[in-house]
Length: 116
Image (cartoon, rainbow, N blue to C red; front, side, top):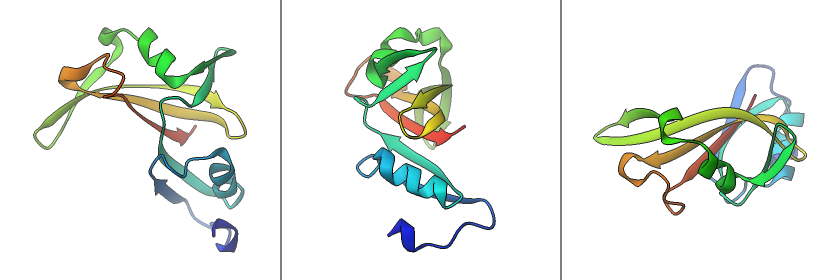
């Protein structure tokens, strides 16, 4: 489907959920000149300072004091962002997000990426 799209002449963004965020799909978007923003599953592997780890393990290492509190409508979230590497995708920005009252709960963790 992505292969059928023309090369992006302007900045175009592809936004999708975690289920199709396989590296092949992200790579296909990048080769078409598109920018990708998507959720990824918390078991996905990242490389930070040369260390390989699931993003869920990295989230456990980030202290609560490093998160910022943001409000979306009536809900509040703790968010933290940094750059890391993903296989076959390269450098990406990741955002870790928890509902404000669920910091550290692995079930509540949501992770988003965009190319750096």
